[in-house]
Amino acid sequence: MIKIIFSDMDGTLLDDQGNVPEGFDEIVAELKKRGVMFAPASGRQYYSLEDSFSKYKDDFLFLAENGTMVMYRGELIFSCPMEKTLAQQVLKTAESLPNIYGVFCGMKNGYVLTSQYTEEFLKELHKYYTHSDPIPSFIDVPDTPIKTSFFDPSGHAAETIYPVMKPFEPDLQVVLSSDYWVDLMHPDINKGIAVKEVQKRFGIRPDECAAFGDFMNDAEMLQAVDYSFAMKNAYPEIKKIARFETGTNEEKGVLQGIRRLMKEGLM
Image (cartoon, rainbow, N blue to C red; front, side, top):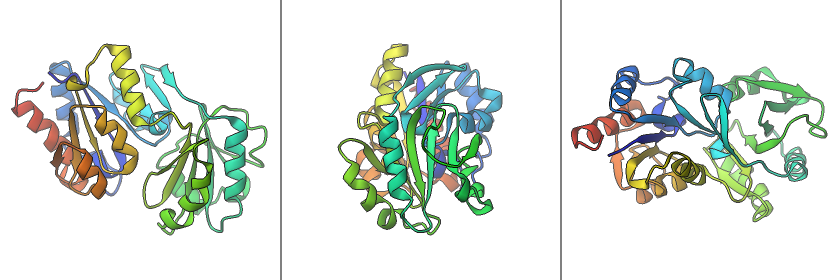
């Protein structure tokens, strides 16, 4: 029987306007009755996830920053920081890229250069980082980096950012998180590693887990569970990895998938 459901946020659980689907609260109440935990698993900052699900902050398990930080009931149960010097080097490299914005993703906060702390970028940033501060330089940031993120407002991150960051492998993991964002993290972390850490911590087997995703940063998470679902709007490679397919994020595909699991008596 399924004991935990991991779900990506953007392009998966949330609709294209960033809203939780209608009927989500009813599904969560039913999951709670059945003893099933829900776990948002996202590239978003932990505080952003906690703010989005404030009424469930003591019920949900949060896999934040692509799995580099896992929190449960306000307690850090797993983290995988990156070397600060590497984070600074990566951010320095990005400064030469025109119209590209960089974020130092710390365990306490997100940090953006004062020169880039513009209204245009903040509108995008605050979707994922509700806690952020401007900083004059990425040298001596008073925080531990768990990820660096880069945003291309033109939506061509695969061409503008990814090739520039790719040479940092294998010292860092370079992930295309969407058409707009590229993330760099410790080479030994991803959502799948975080899922495995959760499984160990709570004594849960892969066949007691389900997961929903749409993009390449969800690949390892889907591989770490037995009941893996790709959204209908998912990246083609994700559809090859997942065992099942569900509706699009606009069609409330996560809720469809959960109802399917309930109907089949798997929770």
